[in-house]
Image 1 (cartoon, rainbow, N blue to C red):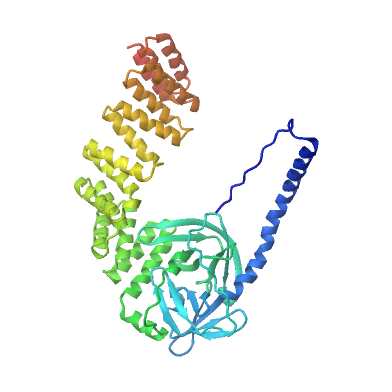
Image 2 (tube, rainbow, N blue to C red):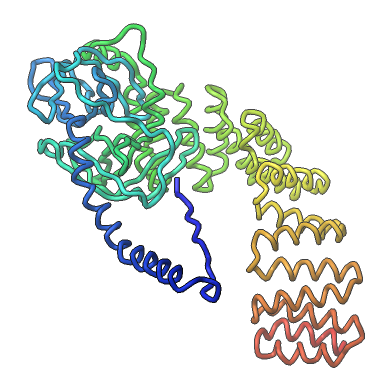
Length: 497
């Protein structure tokens, strides 16, 4: 959390020479130390690495014949528990944990697996000299925040890379993904992504699809949600279970799709989500992502079908929202309303966007009162929802509820104080109320904010003309000739009908 600093103010004409000298000395010292503070933060990086490195491990796996299969990374979250990527132990019948001090520990069991999140929780015997587990930070990091990754790329154990959080993305029905700039190579999958306080913000995942690499981390919150099973499974048992389970292949396709979706590449992601549902047609998450991507690509009928399959398997607010959106674009308004209502019912406290979208449906359906109520509900849930205010104001204008429109546009002005559109809209509402002086002042305010705002000059000229001041209206026409010829022509038609 960023700490706010308050600076004490002083007046030199009221301060004694001694007090003034003391204050200036303190300010000079603060100024002098600022560059050193930044430098000392950099100096703390080696100390941070020394503290967390003993908790980062290499994970080596072996096939049924005892031959080396793969090598990845992991880290301690308890003295006898290691977290790594699910794909690191894929197909393994045996695995070893290699600590930075040279000790090796056999993996005793798999305690929990999050297949979609690509996370596995492994059990080992506690080391003789206990290793300090890394704490999990469950809140999302800030974009631009510095991070460190300790992994084992290409077999080089304990390699350190650093970078920043480049983005935190919300993927519908899946959750959050953290994009990072720190380099991740083969063998670094499962590495801890650590902030500058030594807290794990996520687990690094490298997925290679179509020759492309995507560097991102699954948030630590998802790690903390892993629930160990009452009957731990051995690695060999996991292999057998995965072989019998058609979901295992589908999950691999799903993860490949997520790697592209994390880069907003729905065109490539949809291919893998469709492969996932072909492998397992009961895979709700894959159907949901297929619906989301098809909608993004403008394939509304396909999106509707996929989203319906998703909610039939596992209802979710996101998929119902997509059902509403697809029906809206297909002009099936009754079905669109039902989709959005279901989304609101499932997630009432995070449904501002659903109410806003509901308002758009009622707008196109010609139900003005319902449209107004939908925007009001969106604003109730999100008081700074500018788009909802704008739609509500426009609806009031079309319904000739000009006094209500004025109040809405005033709210927009307070939320967007430098925007010229809101005062212009206030002026248009005042004009319809025959409050010409108030309208003229609003149009002038819009012009002050945007000196080349052609529509505001036209409106001001129109208002002045309604007030009987033709000469002043002509002045606005002369100005418009040099700013916007189209609005100048429209104003001239009013002045000289």
